[in-house]
Image (cartoon, rainbow, N blue to C red):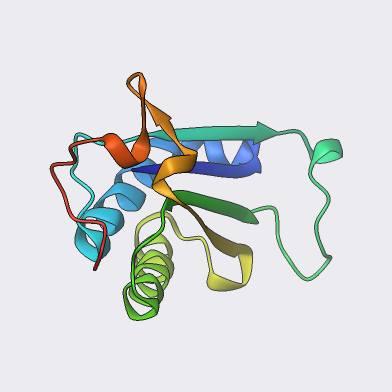
Amino acid sequence: MVQVKIYGLKENIEPKRFALSYVVQSSLTEAIGTPEKKRFQRFIILKPEDFIFPSDRTNNYTIIEIIMFEGRSVETKKNLIELLYKKIQETVDIAPQDLEITLIETPKSNWGVRGVPGDELDLDYKVDL
C-alpha cells in the first residue's frame, strides 16, 4: 500500500499535476513494484503565504511524502528516491535543490483498508523487496 502527498505552490503544481502524477507512479512501479492501478495521490496546493521555505529554494520548491507499508530494504528505498529525483527533473523540470522526498513507513497492522487491518489484506504485489 502506498499513498502519496505532493505539496507545492499553486503556480508550480497545477500546470505540472498530471505529469507529476505519472512520473511518481511510474517511479513507484519501477522501484518497488506498485501496480499502476494502485495510484493513491493527493496534491496539496498552497498559496505563498501558506508555504514558507528557505530562501535558497525557488517557487518550484516541492515536497513529496510517500506513506507505505514497512518492509522494503534500504537499497530499494534509496533506489526509489534516486529514481524520483532523476525522473522529476527530466519530466517536470523541478531541480533536486527544489525537491524534498520523505518516505514514511508504517506497519501493515496500522492501516485500515477496505474494511480490514492492512496485515489481513491479500496484496497482488510484494512489499518485502
